[in-house]
Length: 219
Image (cartoon, rainbow, N blue to C red; front, top):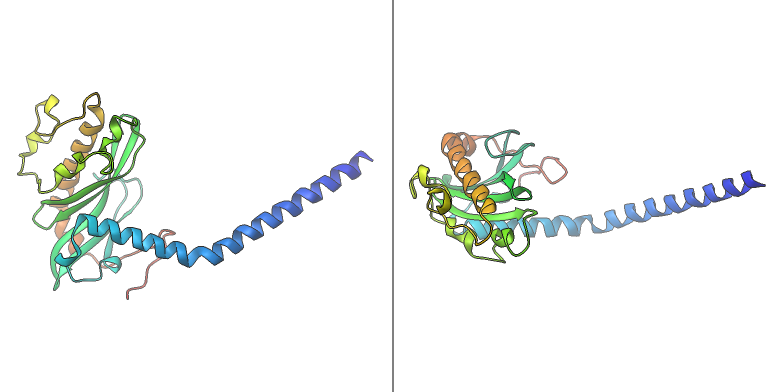
């Protein structure tokens, strides 16, 4: 009797699991085009936030190359770089960089850099910093992140790429020094990486992949 009850319950659970898997699969196939479209729109908004669209005329969404893992950008996996050209003349690129030493862990950022090494824009995309303190790295919480625009390794000089508490040129937040210290230090590393590799990055073959790692066809 007991074995029959167990078998019955097992069959019910198996049927329930099968229905759930089927619903997930159907939902995925119904929404995948919408999701892909929204991701593309979000990417376009981010790129336009960092480098104004009227400054380049190539199809930036299909003009990418990959930065290998374990570079000075703090990436543990290959990361896509988007390149902007105006009539085939390099204008800027947008790349991800990760500060490993935030107060609560990694701080992920996307950085737009003009060909001459000047920062076009910087945004924090992911972090776990303290709400009300370290989260001021978000543009929706504070304009601090906008202060990087126009900066380069010559403005200020590299030895001043620190928060003011450490003798540098950058403001920190009241009650939160670790977070801005991590961001400033990692952005300086990213600019150094850009300076050492910009021609390689702009001249590398196109290699765009979608979020699942599959190549994206050029339009």
